[in-house]
Image 1 (cartoon, helix red, strand yellow):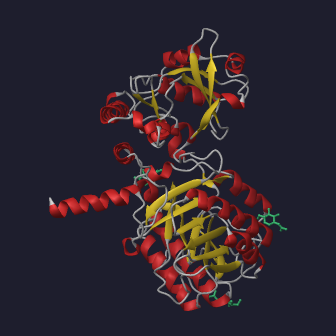
Image 2: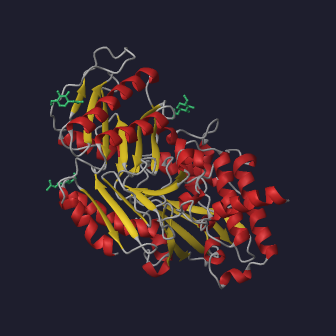
Length: 537
Ligand SMILES: *[C@@H]1O[C@H](CO)[C@@H](O)[C@H](O)[C@H]1NC(C)=O
Ligand SMILES: *[C@@H]1O[C@H](CO)[C@@H](O)[C@H](O)[C@H]1NC(C)=O
Ligand SMILES: *[C@@H]1O[C@H](CO)[C@@H](O)[C@H](O)[C@H]1NC(C)=O
């Protein structure tokens, strides 16, 4: 808190938009580093870092070593002080791909990206005391431009900055060969490239698209200051980001840096085109759509049932929107999920989707009893389950007493059956994508029912976990290949299921963030125990 009171101001007032701070003495020491992207202005920098100081302690409450990345700033704090002369491998790094595939010519695209990154890094280390550069290269008619950004903390020497970026490019370029954009975010050095403009201010490096077929990096770049038009900037906002969305991920970095970083992106990447494709091999038939029509409930009925979505009837804020308790005129208790407005889908598309979701019926799935698509509202009406969600019991020191081994076994078994139905036995083969304890509801007999299945598709690939920037947690359940490559499959659901089984058995929550030096994280602890057993049993 002491650092948080001063560091954002110090960083935003410094010409480099960079500051570090140290308070206390070993072992009660906190060291922090704050850096804004080179194109940020002072006020935006301050806003971003203030936000970071609010979010990071909430996102990683048990971590002594945490880093949070936004589009425009990075904040790191730790009980260990990292000096710029130290081994630059201490650069907790977060690779993030833009999952849209490149072009018809990925190899040529990657050559242009490589040339552009080389030129941008060179500019940052030779021509900028702030170790910051932005660049742009021509590509083809379909994707006219590639934009790049590279930056180091300005306390590094240019040589160390170059090393730091070069190591990251070498590590990650072979991984991201087929994506149209990527960001490799590090505490000490970061870079990013996209085919839409994502930075403000002048373009420092420009590569003309002459001999794009030559394998060698292009010759010395021309430096042509150019200000991106506001229209282009606005376009980026529309196409690539949903402001206010928060994404929290933990992931192992390159094996060399045995460390896990917690981060947030201020802006969530937009859902992918891929997500809008129908279930493979299946589409809603006319009679299914009719069955959705028969499930339609008036908005006035739902307003009356929930006391006009009264705050007192709010059951919680889930991944896709707030949930309200309600009572229908016939006395049936319901839970009404009010989807946040971020679903880009129109009513017809949504109906088609819901027709498919409505067909999913299993005793371990929460039953959808109705929908309402009136007046801009997107409301899903589910059966009400009085015991609420598993996390509310499992992680409550008193309530968890109710869960003896028999009940825990029954819960695990029920979840597995529901999941098997989604993955294998239903006509649709649904990957849940957001399986976690708070999405497991319990009926009066403690039978588990999976909720929120099928909804990931309404919102695209990324989990819209955060309705507010306070909600965290989902990403502790995410399989590494999903975090790093965006590959999601039934296997990733199985990973999340495994995390949940560990939580149910141990009664401990898998932390969202952790670092390997502490044994506070559940997965780390379990891995260590498993290794121990392997050795001695
Ligand atoms: C600072 O940058 C932000 C974001 O780019 C912009 O909205 C704002 O208008 C800028 N403020 C000034 C004073 O230039
Ligand atoms: C991108 O390309 C990879 C391999 O070429 C393929 O497996 C994947 O489905 C593609 N993704 C999209 C969104 O087209
Ligand atoms: C640095 O700037 C000069 C002059 O603006 C330019 O000629 C040179 O190419 C730049 N160097 C790099 C590596 O971009």
